[in-house]
Length: 491
Image (cartoon, rainbow, N blue to C red; front, side, top):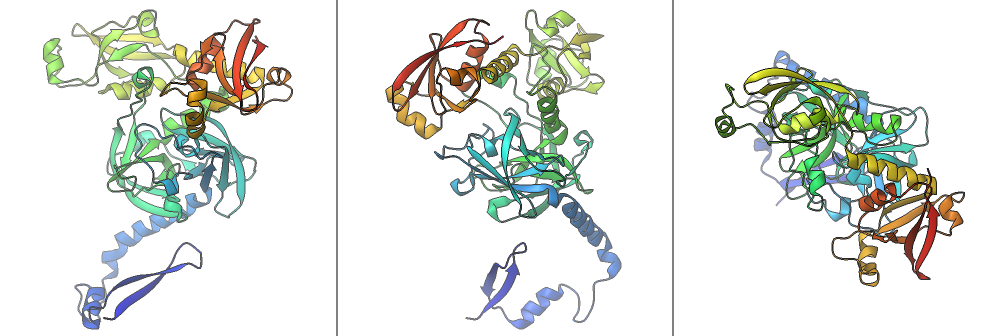
């Protein structure tokens, strides 16, 4: 049987492949190509103008944004299993080290996903003109899977940013990235949903689950492994989101993709550049997940429909308590923005800074009140920030021990299942830790008689040490085994 071959060129390379299908006869092929029109007839130009206009808009958006979309290749010496956010489906092994990035400043700042660069020892960024740079991670927010990278370069092409709060369901959107290692690719779709939850749940941290941010853009634009960190665009070529996950159980596209709204992602950039860390507003309440007819009847609420957010707990000495919020209050709006889901209210609070005053409209005993609350900062965030600052003053950088090494050392160091040892990755030769002989690749096992079980717990422990006093750091290294050093905690 004869076969029909069609050569297709990918990107601007010389690679060709053939699409082969059974030969079904020249008459039938001619009819298919002509569509429903008689032989020799042309489709009226006016009937194709709207589609041609949309195609031009797609091309313009792509051409405007493409120079600022980069390929990211993240590698680790021990090739640990890539850390994915809990809502992200498994990524096929071949594409675990690949992702995309979006240049947001001409001097080298790049937005991407945290899961693309988590645990990486080396990050290489390839620009659209094939220049390559080594990148460093400036910071990240794992709750929304966003990381900020930096390369040493000037005059880089950048993207334009839109106001993602103005997005509406049904808007056309375009996704650019490097899916499956194939090179720069454009796909299109519409906004399918806004404020979408993705089922974030960290089984090791109930505390983190209380503060999770879930406010994703859902789109049917095709997103595959490698798209992560690339931009989601509007028809003007402006960034409305950062592509982050595929709504699938296979790791490949079969339905919907999720993107972090650019307004939320840029909060991370602003915090990291202004404060050097993530700074989130904190209210101090526990909320019902949603208002239901049953909840309205149970509490005899004077609501014509399920709306607002019900407060089932107000933590003592929290900003909410100091501002006068009470258990049983129904929050209807924040600064004039109507809220109908706890996730939306949580996201609005996180987008504000500590010490900022917000105005809440609440219904209390079926009466409407305006309550002004001065937001605070979550104690956990404050302690982690203080711990990282102290480690920097001591002159050491740390990370979670790669999974393969942790497994090898678990028995020798008596680490229990689920515990995550901490490893020194860099030592400032002029710092206090270097003076005491601490070296890169040392595994820290204990601080002042407190066992190290995770990176977060270790940093928190360091933050709680007394300033100006000596603390004992226990660590393990292959050549000598367990050693101990006394370090004076900086003020």
